[in-house]
Length: 165
Image (cartoon, rainbow, N blue to C red; front, top):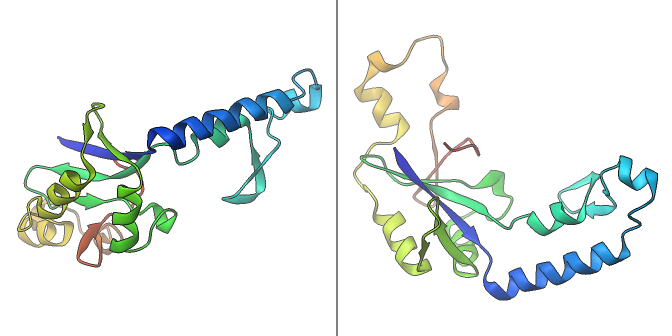
């Protein structure tokens, strides 16, 4: 068991996003059959030039960004989302401080307290490479574990996967 942490926007940004949503809904041709068929996707998607978003998807884009996971005995594992929001430690810390941090249970945590906890969590704990070295019987020889081992960016343990459970 572990705990996942997320970055959510500050109140002003949430208000601004909802104002934009309201404007998008006002300009929407809600009776147009083509727009209905396309799920009201008429907004250019900044992350994918070939697809469009509907107003709700635009509102929710980046609203809740998974930061990483804390698990007992394991070093904190960061989620870099394939460098979508940040690509190094300085950008990550700036991104966190520009928003709010909440855990998977909805509890808000002070950004600096979260950063301190995450950076100090099980500093001498497990990571994938150490675990597989210490427990060779826990994995088969048919899997290339180098594809599963975590990366290290600026001293941070970063998952190669963007999916956390």
